[in-house]
Image 1 (cartoon, rainbow, N blue to C red):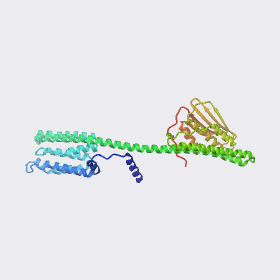
Image 2 (cartoon, helix red, strand yellow):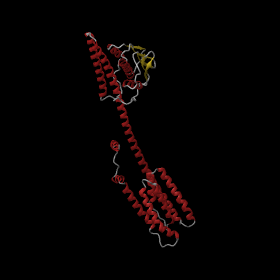
Image 3 (tube, rainbow, N blue to C red):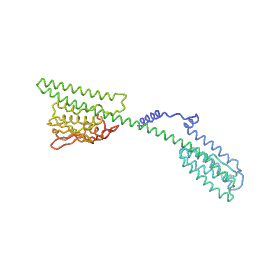
Image 4 (spheres, rainbow, N blue to C red):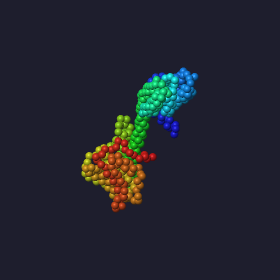
Length: 421
């Protein structure tokens, strides 16, 4: 299962044919994200520890002593959180905001690049909305904290303004760049994902078309072979049973003619399938003439009649369906009702539909509904938006009936059940 998915993924990557990212450095950072994060962390650590080093550590006062003890640890911890900026960008953002708040208690104005990297990471790896919201909350929180400290004299006005402006400017620049990069990254990811979906849909459509075409071939082959072989068997049995040489010769000639007709139909169908320029794989071959079907059955000695009332202009697909339904209905009657005294085929043309009905009085027992022939007839009727039934009728007869509308066009891809094996 895993190997199949791997092969499918590799094939999708090959068919997508994505271009190489521009720039040697960009490709290097894309292939080595851990190295990039470590270098960024070290860079920020170096620039962030510098503000904490020049402060007077001998200064008296609890605030200066606390800052001198806590600031280096907090800065190192905040820089280390940058290693998780891709998978959890909110963590380094909160840590960076905390460090900026701590710098309010420095002896002189100071700043770090942490807020720039944190806002950039939040915009790229989380969302643009999260970056703007986080920046607003960070600036508002810092101003809210600095205002009472400045008013009470704990923090000088210069340090308060410098810290607030540093957070605002660096955060704004990082957010703007991150929104641009993150939006482009998400857009490209969406385009690639959509391309993969289109590849999958294309493969699925190809599989559906192949399955539908196999089902169509199975229907055509079944109708051609089943009807012709049924007639050939009946004629051969009649030729073997009669002692009249002339009748036997006529039956043999009819067998040969039926076989030739079957070969002609098969060649026509295979010619359509092998046509490299064919653009409609479900286009039917030449319609079957119901009168020829009835005449062939009559030559085989079966009491088949055909009645046709009304006239209408049928599309090639509908005419093909009518001919095949008559052919399969007569073939079923010949095969399953050999003792029938009447096999009546009827075609009724009305303004909105054409009705095909085959009645025989020789069916015995319950007829199955899972055969390939009946399944194919149901598919043919559905293909032209019609209805098909095969059921017992009054008087011990069996009725096969299809009602096909004349104002619908067939589906481009017929929905077919599983192909016969």
